Length: 156
Image (cartoon, one colour):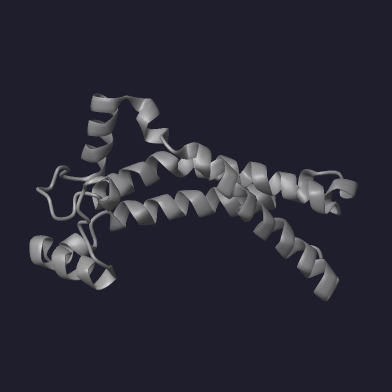
């Protein structure tokens, strides 16, 4: 951080674009894009797939309970977040190499380097914050179901 003696690398969004284009070219703006797409497919696939698959298996009394659907939503959001977190770690590492010599040849190379140099646990560093953030995802899932019933009288 700048207050602890370090200098800021960028002075705003436009500066990020200018410096990245200058040092890495247009490809630098898209570093980590492919792995981002893979990550979002895994995350959203599990997020919606698990919720929509498990909810009908719940007893009717629980299906109608906001608290129960919220708990299901939190479990699903946490599970999908943890399942996709290693992919997100690779994505962040790929993107962080902007302006420096390219450290990784591919997403798979990045993954292998992280595991070899730091261990498998390092793929999950910071995942605890995702568990707290999953509360918002749970609210979206259960809130949407609740609004569907309230506004249109229909269940999922």
